[in-house]
Image (cartoon, rainbow, N blue to C red; front, side, top):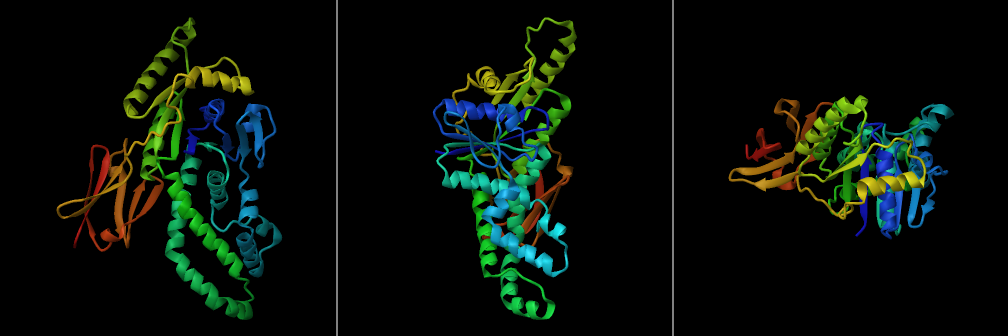
Length: 390
């Protein structure tokens, strides 16, 4: 079975080298593997000391690498749609410079990185796809975007489709506005369908996993906890925590005594906080990790002992619906959060959850539509939302 492993973490924790070590370990097992970077600050080429770009490059036997260029994917895979929007911008008087930098929705460029991963999964013969993502905040924005855009398209696309057919001749004659033509509309429809398939793929716990890279320091550990909570908010499967840059316990240098105590304290905290998730430790190296031999060191020191590294680790902690005596209950696993940090309300046929700067719209199953939210409370790190007839 094909697998997709997505690596993220705070900037500077070493997620690229950990992802690369997974990719190399996979290739050494005889599985055809591709390592994909979706971070706009690509550094796979620096790590492997080899030129890597938007075309697949062979690193070693069974291992390939790719640095996704979203503009390149966008203009090659969805060219008709983007040209239609460019014509629309031209018709309302924007200059060429604005057209060249035009994106119809902020963040859509990054969306094409995920669509490229989906394409690799569906149309290539790679058995494992290892994804080196951007730092935490950008990755969260990236992973929530398909669901958010799909939600908006689901709400407005049918109306928009009719408007294009009815208003297009009028707009051209009266307002000289160039609306997307039939070919472009088919591209938009294609994008909509691809978004649905993309969500299903990324949230399929038998295929896709999120793996978090951290280091044993207070700020990094706290961000890792928040990252894990937000991944659960959007129903992604986190099945691995990698503690990087762990100092050797036997180090004989008084300078590191305090550092060792600090690291032990936060390693204990990570073990307590993420006890249900497989944990891996990777040592601190006294040299720069550059080249294939350095990546092999990580494989041997941090990953070699695990026989289940690529095994499906479905935590089954995502969102669930249960029938109760008086209606239905939606349960969502949200660890490391207080109840007063969550804002819950019902809007039409969606439950809207807001935690800090992150918001998720959860479309309700048909059986729940028309019911009212009677209460929302926390039970064992789960947000429980009760739906009943008014």
